[in-house]
Image (tube, rainbow, N blue to C red; front, side, top):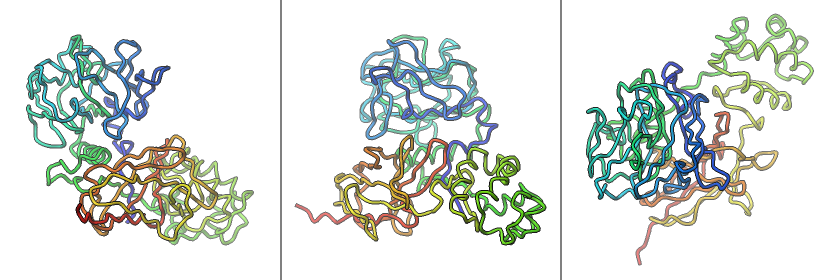
Length: 447
């Protein structure tokens, strides 16, 4: 059955009304490119902002991940939404200091809070290891509630509560000199309700993206693999969206009579398997109006239909909802920049090594894939085994670059590797497709 990776855009609308998704990699920076002035909300409702230059947070990295970096000293830096909202679940991908330290000076440090209610709602570190927030304890990496979470390497810190409405944000507090210390890479809030299923899916999504899913409890449903979404086949979409085509959709063959009756603009093509531009153009307005938002939205159709028209063929379209056929064909090949393509893309690295990096550019029949504005992720799994790596890549000079982490290559063997190209509109494609990169981790023979 067809599946695709789950994304935050799959969260039900009812759980977004008092929420937001802020990926710090998308931060807007000051003129010097050094500090964050705003972070857009993926759902397009409430960005995090900080117009005051003296309170803006430096932009940097935690490991390979773009992040806001609060200094390892007393500070008042913070960000918050401009308008109040009332979340039911709030979580942040963050690291305290360098990931190994305790709060050695016993300062009160705010992880996140609500400035509008005078700081009544907040999650803060009061002592070396303890948190307080109206008696409700946070969880770390989908574990049980705890008040002793330090030391804290890059992890998911979260809490469910009957929060007050307010201007929520990282390090947000009315008390000066109680800013966060360390890095934060992602914040998410859900409300007015947050179901257990959505929370677990967010945990799995973030755990595999940022590389800490292996710290989840063994019973977590997304500990070994990220959440996926079942994709309704296009025949089922047509059955629900275009009732007049039900009979033809079931057979995946559109007869002249069916098309004449339901999509009159295509009359004249008895087989309905090859369409010229002139025949297809009258069909577009009806498709754009008929297909419901639950399947293809108009923006997706605009991207999907021109390649089909140009190819001259529309035999049996079988695409996931929201995925754009940008090339008109499914083949995307990979190669190391500056080298010739090979029948099998193979990458060798020594056991326990982090070099060489995995650097690949993507090609179709029409040339290199333009990665401008795209996010690229790399995943690796053992043959017939679970996903053991799912991390974001850097895009450098038109190529995707994955910087290996220390624990990625600990076990020698052969693995399957694949890149995911996630475009600004949320559509995504795997590369290579079909197939995968043959990753060979060679055994360390010792010194």
